Length: 165
Image (cartoon, rainbow, N blue to C red; front, side, top):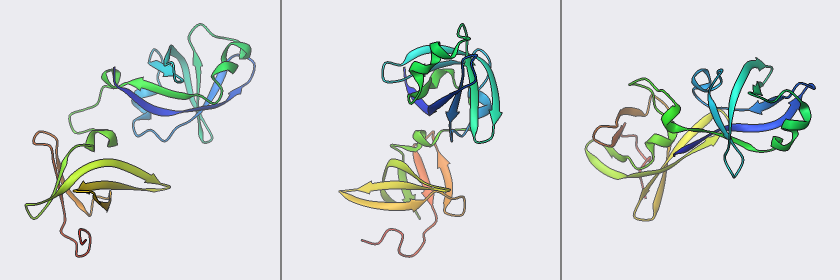
């Protein structure tokens, strides 16, 4: 199984076993729905979402078979994951984690391989490694020309200074 982090249980809500999740997951509509399997904590305890509702900055869920605060308090502070195989993405949809390992090119010049995607508040950076040199590339549509998962390549605009040593 390939586990994908979707958020963290930050607290309980009410007495009926509802929990608050903080999540910045890109495809919430595909994850937070009735019947979806989630995996909680380091041990990846499998649970099933019973109900979902958005509330302020939180994603509120109840877990199937649990209807008491005392049964969910043990999950407070734990990370929540899903199985990548259960995430039914459309053909043109992808997760940021899917970019890792793709080769980066500007004007058909090889620049390195994506090693990770980092988040800084409202923006993201793609970290490109080339022989121990790290390049930071803003993850915005004006810079990313094309992402080709079939060939495993990302094509980036040639911006002066972006890949200088």
